[in-house]
Image (cartoon, rainbow, N blue to C red; front, side, top):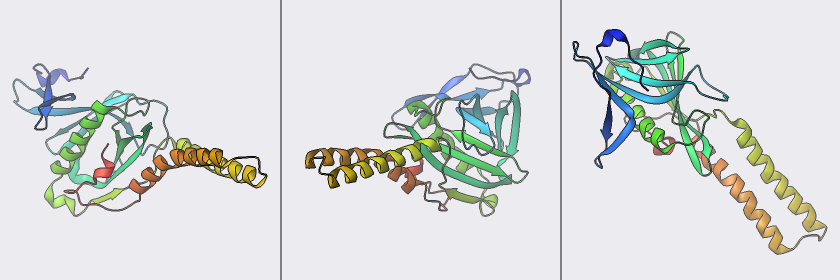
Length: 232
C-alpha cells in the first residue's frame, strides 16, 4: 500500500510502465493531485536512516522524488532533503542469495542526514521486482540532481554493508577445506579425486566473494555513467 497525505487530493494510484518492452513495474507508482496537478513518483523500496552496517529486518518502505527533493519515511514520519544538498552518493552490492546480489545506495546530505536505500526485500534477500525498481530509482535520482550541484557531490562505489558474517563465513569455510585437504594429502589419507572435489567446493564458496570484492573496490564514478556491476 502507498500512504498518502489528506491534503494531496489524491486520485487512484497507477503502476508505471518502464522500458521498451512495456514491463509494468508495480513497485513504481505515480500519484496525481486533483487540484495541484502535481505528479509524484514513488518507488516502493526499503530504506533505513543512517549508513546501515547490519540489520535483521527493514520496515520503512517508499522513496519519492519531487520538485528537486527526496522524500522518505522514518519511524512513521515523513522526512525530506534537497538533492542540491547532497554531499556524497555511494553505490555498492551485497550477497542476496545464491549467485545473486542486491544493490545498496547510501546518500549523505550536508545537514548530516544519511539515508540507505535497498533493492532487497525486508530481510535482505534478492528480489527481482525490487531490483528493477531500484535501477529505475538510481537512474532517476542521478538525473534529478541539479547540474550546478554535481561538481560538489562525491560519487563513490564499494564498501561492505550488512551480512558481513556471510563473507567471513565463506572465506573461513574455504580456508578450512583447503587446510583439511592439505593435511590429509600429506598423511596419505585422501585420494586425488576427493582433493579435486574439495578444491571445487572451495572455489564454489570463494567465487561469489571474489565477485563481490571486485565490484566493491572503492572508486569514484561519473553520475551519467553508473557502473553496471553495481546495479542488481
